[in-house]
Length: 369
Image (cartoon, rainbow, N blue to C red; front, side, top):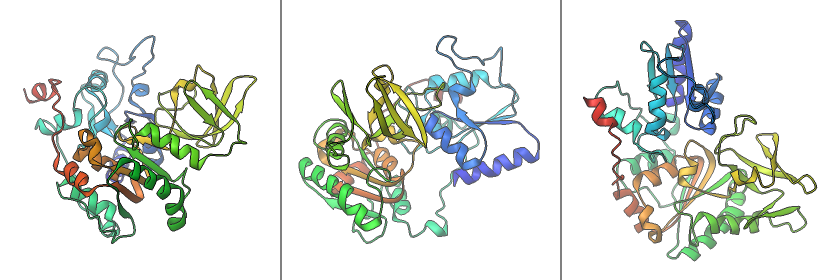
């Protein structure tokens, strides 16, 4: 929906010979935007000429030269970055924010997209129609149900949305490992490492990111003959699924990029990672602190990405994190299949819990006034 809308607006701008920039808060989202539109897209930081030494190049005194800036995944933009973006806009330029306000808010301060929408100062268009080719997709149907405060269908009467019951965290963890390693590959022919993404609400516990990463690594990449290296408490092995956690503009790798460890050069102390077909050298330990295992990632780290298959534990044991926008965000990451593992009562609780923590950045008040 929104990608098609962006493409149509770009076509209109180019017909009118208006200049524009495409940008997104994260490198991964910018890469997806560029691939979807066939046009250059970049992070907001790069658009604004940011450098750690000099800060932001563009501002009121030296604004961008453009007719329009289009920001995708705007829900991930915090108020400080939004401030810098507004400073850099020419007075006669247009700003278009595109995003899903019902997803998790930004990691940083503020609730930018929400505040802009509710200020009454911006033209707002909502895309809420399910088109015919997606009408039978239970991923789409259940995403809409969750967003509207309705419990998703969990009767396993579909080809793309499944629920497996588990009352205890250990039972759920065992089930997740089996589903990822055995059941999904057998039923759908997917690669358990490249095609399946486990997303967890919390880091600790049997169904947390840390433990699930360890267990999935031991099952999916267990070859003791493969080269490995221990860096701090973590063991990295050739074949491991890993994620880059910060932007590196010099090497064009970005926060959220996922790859596989390709090799280890013990003599030069270099970890070689294949990211989108490019072999990237990580110095040990200078660069490897930006790498984490990515068999399982947090819901926040999944924002702005899409995966063929998403598997998520949903148990009352992490009730403090069970919110409607968290469940909605996880479901909408999947392109082909969603698997929820846990308790129906936990799903009910998450759907009903729409109490997003209030954020008082002052932006909404200033926009209204």
